[in-house]
Image (spheres, rainbow, N blue to C red):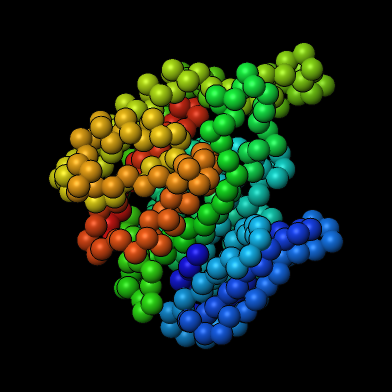
Amino acid sequence: MQFIAWRFGLCGRAFLRQPNGGQFEATVDGGAAQHISTAGETTESGFFEIDAPQKGENSFEIKTTSGSVRMFGAVLENDGPGVVYDSLAMTPDRFIPGGAPAIQHALGLQEIPALDIRAACANTLYALQLARALIQSNIANHVAVCLAEVQSPFLDLSPPAATLSMLFGDGAAALIVSGRDPTVRKGAIAPPLKILDVFLATNGEYVDDLGIRCPGTEFGNSRSHDPNDFPSDYLPRMNGQSVILQASRRMVSACQTVLERHELSANDVRWVVPHQANANLLAQVARGLGLSQDACEVISVLEESGNTSSASMGIALDTLRHSGKIDGGDYVLLPAFAAGFTWGAALCQA
């Protein structure tokens, strides 16, 4: 995992300290590694700091060396305007407030705006669109998009629910959207990606076909709507036929929209990095776009992490960047489909 920052004198990252926690190491500009243990007698938040040069562009790299490590964000800059987006779409730490203020505080950031986005599996696209707009309007120089889900405690693990629960996993990723000159830095694992376009759409007709009903004001809470009497309302629900039909059509259409806006076709695309819903949907999207396996590759991390909802696109992007296969000029499509239904696609270029 690698980050870029300008003019920072101190870098840091929040992590979860826990019994049997693992270790990771951090370096700045390829220098000496600082080794950090996340083990602790109790489960609590932790934070580490590492010094970096005050001027110019700096590379901050983190690598897990052993065991289980859970991280939450990075301090990248302390002297310019910025925004934090938290994307704990389905599994927030609290009902109110969202997780973004807690992340802002844990990272020691200035009193910058911090907000949650609740667009589930399409969170990355909404965050990219908002980040791009904030930077283009000179409101922010950098935007941190924090993508994290802990879905396992909410799943029904009984045999009848296996077809749904087996799809999901826990995971996290972080993206930094910057208005700085995207010059490729020395030692970079991949060229930076420029956001060319984002298309988003919603149709609330299908609001009950995917999601979790309770707690909420429509169906009630544990006092007015007893979980023992209505257990399914407190668990993930999915109309599989409706979801796969709409998702396959809408994701393809969204990709075609952003390509047509830039007078491109699917033949110009080198990489497709979709929300990691399931293998069947990814295959249908590839067929719908008419992608050639020789010219374009669809990135999948389903076998490693499953469907991690809002975090999945960030994890897949990180996998692609670390593959070392991205070349300058490559077009990258980012399609997603989410509860609501809401969907869209982003077009980027290396």
